[in-house]
Image (tube, rainbow, N blue to C red; front, side, top):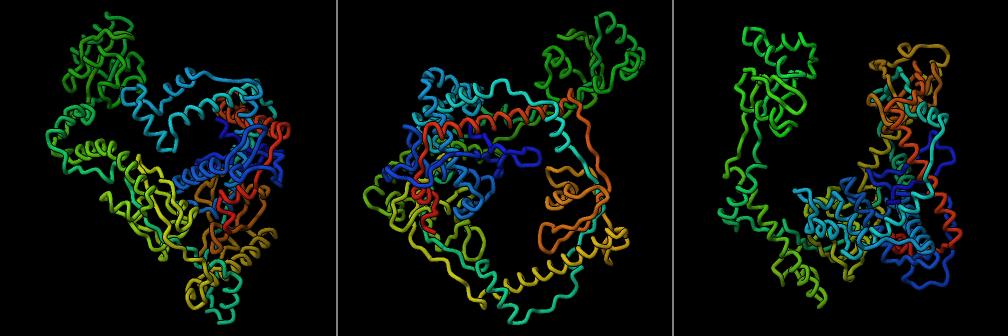
Length: 633
């Protein structure tokens, strides 16, 4: 799928090539040729690429799906404001247009894929295989429904994906990076530096006197937005999932016992043995060695005589199923502890075995797993009820009932949240406890308004219905209401400024020839870190420090803010190790593979940029703003 393509960079050395948001890849191409002014389209159309149209609802669904994916990565919802601040709206728009451009190109080229080939790729997808390794129709339906797909829509999307891959594969065939490029990238990624450094904290800032009323007021006025009360939404919702409606206490012991018998083998812990093994080229040599052991020679001595390495001698603590050769496994797992086997003719030679440790297998008692089994049975039964409740809930909603009223009619429990901000927190700043973990309800609530009949949200193989009952607008909190927070912010700023000045003075002394230990303030010890690479924080150092270290020449000194205003670092670069390029190593092959993928992405990005200009691309910016929530700001 081309969702992994990234923005081509004019200078790939030292620049971020992939945009990663907690593991979620979002493409962003350089030149799009997207019109700034949109004319001549209906309100339901967000963009048009040649004859392919992207509807506002289609883009809204894609955008909300992406926000939910990112929210799951973060472990909390991402608000529309946060998403726009880091450019998710633009990136998803570019991604959607890029895919539409490739779809339009496939149409112009007359490319196609049969239903049989599409189904074959789905049947072979490991995501849809059950415990027996075969395609599981129920798992398939459950997963695609969880991500908002119908079967027909999923089939159509997979057909589009296959055609996009055909185009991308054609235009990137034969790409090969030069050795010069590989050597440069190897140096960039694997160059290592060492530093001596001081970490300055609030303790080195000295005493900070309490602020005067005038100073506090001035700081408040300058940072008023920081202390502003967010907009809150009041809402009601009802959750219908297999887990929420399952009644495990109603499952009989007979049913649970039956499932226990079916799962007993999988639930059991198999016996494990520490096994030593010597392989012989023939039976005669194995029998001769066995005779020596019978005369008093140890198994270990026989191994030494034959030059068997410890790693080849000891198979480790393993289960019977871990052994590749059934005959050897059978002999090993019937052998008494600390005894040596007779020669065993295995698939790879004749072996002698010794068992030095036995860990007995364990079988759970029914009573210890009964509740868990009953819950599984109850949830499986509840899956069928979920769709029935979904249909009844939709009927009630279609008849004009609110979420609370519809839930009451069906005997379900609706929850009311009096105040929820965009991040899913209440007025106390804590996540709203009544919202289940992983349910991105805040995003949905802030993309709706009071009185709107909202679509159900897919959640944990079930559904969530919600109504926005009211809106409390954002407001400026008066100084008296947030005085403690304002003073804490003012104090942190004062500490940061003092540390910045102190760090600058220390660097000047270092540049004048002083040693780090000589300029270290009282109570601050000189620390050191080695093996620092550009990508990722090393030795507990913040990324800001790592970046500054690689901007500083060897033997040079520098200072930089740490992870907050109250942490500052002063350092001297003491070592710089530049790696040599060895092109035949596995590490270099991995580097090459990654670079080839980046070059392919760049090539595809350039092709799509040309496509969009050639085909013609127009965007309804007003519809984009509406779909992403920007129109309400």
